[in-house]
Image (tube, rainbow, N blue to C red; front, side):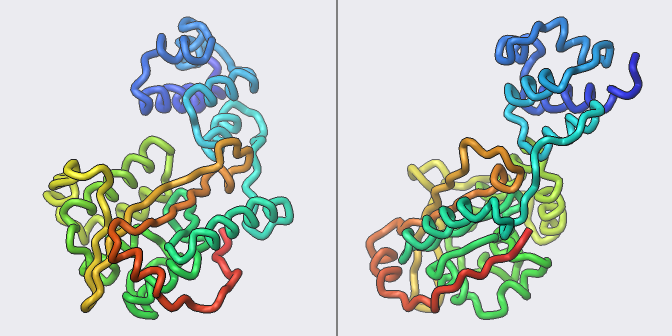
Length: 276
């Protein structure tokens, strides 16, 4: 057994099991023989770089994790992690800002894989202002983080009137992403927020199947707001940062919320965002 490839063998086996695939299912999807996959998982065969990319593509492994596969097998990483202000990201970020601005007066934001807010439009900022100008400081963390905004007791949770229905869906989605996408940074956020949660609520999903989409229902004073979310990603990303970008657009779930958002006073336009 080549000891230098044990790390790759473990990663391949772990990701196959995360997808709940047998070796035969991976073989049929990837075009690699089941026997060779067995040899790779037991480190009896050494993978080529092309084989690593072929198998990681079949398993839909995120680009950040594909770099780990390559490194574990003794190859150099091939996917770059660019900052948002990198000149090569200008077109991507221009498209993101255009999407967010075009979505006004409805809220929209761009997130990384740990649900840190990278860019937000004015409608989202105005909505968050309802919680107080210091809300991001109250919920803690060094970044504006959507999970903290929802699940910290000083965040949005006290205003949500259907928390028992929506809270479990959000928590389970984040936990699923942390597990299936190799999100160690998201897992750290979940572990930090877990002491504030009631397990019997987070895993209940009460009444969550009664509507086509579970809306977020907020009550702030006399205001009543109901929103649902649509998520978009970049389908052909070849950069780690772009691969992990999520565009979350919020839409009114009733006529009253639509009227409220269209009448809401938006703050001045800004191009500021938090860098990775």
